[in-house]
Image (cartoon, rainbow, N blue to C red; front, side, top):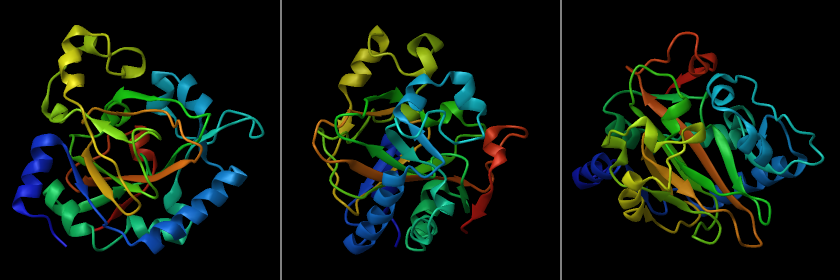
Length: 260
């Protein structure tokens, strides 16, 4: 499968692209069953809600031990980390051959899977999840350039009530001042320069099997989950082969997989 010229142009312009019904529902359900089992048993490495909110900018940039800092009995899981090595179903999705030509088009390079970043089952659990503030994923990653794309797979319904993704179109092509970002490099909602951009935000409801591709510098966010059911998603990141992890950085600590 390949993208049309118009779809590639839309991604380059907006920084994100949605493909509907990309993965069959039975494959999504199989991965969801495994994810829910790992969530129930809180199988490390995981990130909890407190881990997410309490970690410093320095910690997020340099950490290589992805185990939670909380006591398991009390924590609320925010994401399962390092899913490439958790189960063959997760690995197969990340190495999916149908998606490779698309990624090659978007990267304009050979495709390399990085296990250092994302490589996660993302959750927003009912009654205990928190809002995800505006941010760029690239802020804690260390590479020679910005040719990285994330692949987001909905394993169930995603909407404004349970925390669907929201994007600021074209923000991956914009330059920002340091003052426009606050603690942990979140994009300030109360900054006058940011207000008009945030008003132009876009979001779209997703169903199981829908895939979203988004650029590593695209500003995005999500609400907390206000429903009675968990929202479970799968996200991983790829880069162009010419894009190299900086020596001595966290980005270099984990293996890469050439997808071709």
